[in-house]
Amino acid sequence: MKDTYNFVAKEMKDVEVLVGTKGILDWDQGVTMPEGAVNTRAEQMALIEGIMHNKLVSPKLGEAIKELDEHRSKLTDDERVNIREWLRDHERAVKLPQDFVEECAKHTTQAQQVWVEARKESNFGKFEPALKKMIELKKRQAEYIGYKDNPYDALLDEFEPYMTVKELDPIINNLRDGLVPIVSKIGNSKVKVDSKILEKNYPEKGQEEICKELMKLIGLSDRHTRLDRSPHPFCSGAGPEDVRITTRYSETWLPGSIYGVMHESGHALYELNFDKKYYWTPLAKAVSLGIHESQSRLWENYVGRGLPFTKYLFPKLKKLFKTQLENIGINDFYRSINCVKPSLIRVEADEVTYNLHIIIRYEIEKALINGEIKVRELPNVWNEKMKKYLGVKPANDAEGVLQDIHWSIGAIGYFPTYLLGNLYSAQWWNKMKGEINDFDALIEKGDCEKMRSWLIENIHREGRRYSASDLVKHVTGEPLNAKYFLDYLKDKFGEIYNEKL
Ligand code: ZN
Image (cartoon, rainbow, N blue to C red; front, side, top):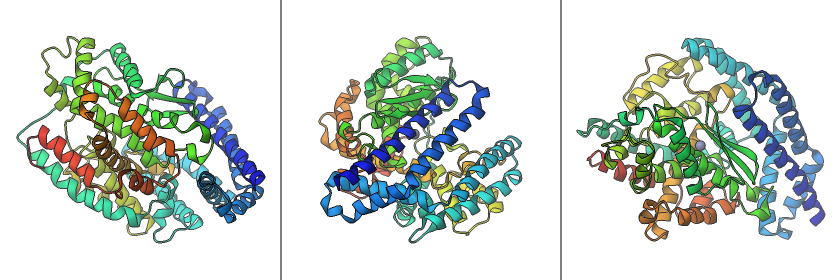
């Protein structure tokens, strides 16, 4: 039994090492690679993908995993978790026929190109046939993978393992019904907040200095991480001891780099704090994209955009940007970084309206996969939902249904993980505040040690021991729900807008 386990562990370690190698190539492509090398890079990526896939679908590996699974009672708890996850990885890989995987890869490259052009021309009709084919492929994928209640489950499961529509729907409906009135009350509030003071000229040098300080404060060391620039910020790396983040600096938008770096640092902290004894196994892997996002959102919004931390950060910014922030008080600054404004573009949305953007995409994706709406109806459906939930209407497809890359690359089932991240983080935040004495006072001093230890101990060190839903129950004693997130918004923004939300 031991030999079989060691064989599987070695094969799966190889797969993880390859994932990390791809991570470094990804990082290189986003940060330093000369533009003209794109085809060479595509060859390298395809080769690594192929090796990974062959390893994962190997019948010898499959038999070994199944044998271990059948003798589960002879395994330790840790080994059982790893076997459960390895079996899942193996089965997902073998369920998709090779020619189907190739067809998907080919169509994704084409669909993405068509999407870029369609968005440029703001012409949904141009993207429609490619999206139609993508939806057909995704429906087939769901059939290959299999599901119990809803074909969408099979797609969601890729990004948020074990999550289902049945569990998610009531939570999302509660969230939506709670959010819509909050947005409208804030819109009608007499208190007007804007973010003009953040749009002055803030030189890059000062931004970079504070960003590096924030990374340290969150708990990242130069020994295992680095900060670089890229057009689209991300977190990537080679594995547990090499996790890198990027950001972009806009001199006329101060919060972009600051809160962006806090966000990516939250992702990196998670990846860097798995238990060393489990490296290269599922016990040293992130639970899901939603749990990952809960780590980044905690640092970006709950800490970063909160009042206690702003009391720590603002004096530092005043020193760095003397003239820009002259005569500006902490309250003005705090309000400006928390301005709520229903907008058309998801990536620019504030904490309150953000999830409504996600809900719109979730409802549409689910309806498409279940054949309840047709691809050609999308612009209308999209615009109606924007009007109904956010009170705004896109003037054209580019700022409406064509704004996100996800559907063009086949990432259907991905959007809900952004929303789940916000809900999980509200539940962590509530629990953590109850368990750490003088929490706000510590944050006000820029002392995040206790918070970091809490996250490492309760979340990072568990790896994939629990599914996301079980982790929430295990850590907070309650199932996933929207209550804590809604309460957090009502408190914070009720005070800023002087409204009972
Ligand atoms: Zn993120």
